[in-house]
Image (tube, rainbow, N blue to C red; front, side, top):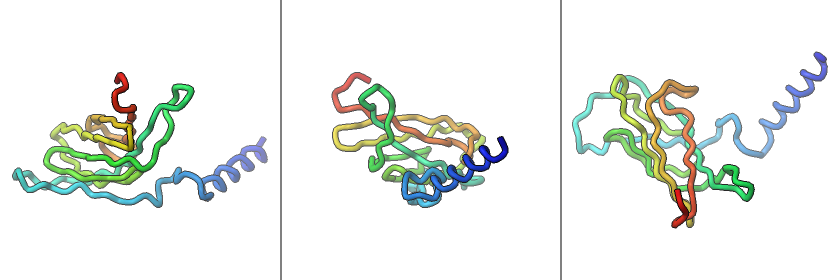
Length: 139
């Protein structure tokens, strides 16, 4: 049993090192949200670093990863434009409970998601998954 577990762990590590999806999120572009300057705000106490990904419906009704979506991301006065997947640098505005809003488009697909400030793997707002439907499809 010990050998089987070790073998599976080795296969998992090799899969993580392959040229497939970046399952460890180590080589993602970094996009920092910036203050628009329209409001006077207190400096953030810290920064969260969630990953944002986009998904579209698959043939069997499941959600399929769809890299390459353009997303407008905002939390309070801080905004950025990111291409999925990306690691965001989001000001942590706690104790204020300000949701992060992401609006993504890719070709004929579009979607919007709102994320409450909750403590997660990468801090508040993590992870971020935006589901997109075809334009004109019932949401």
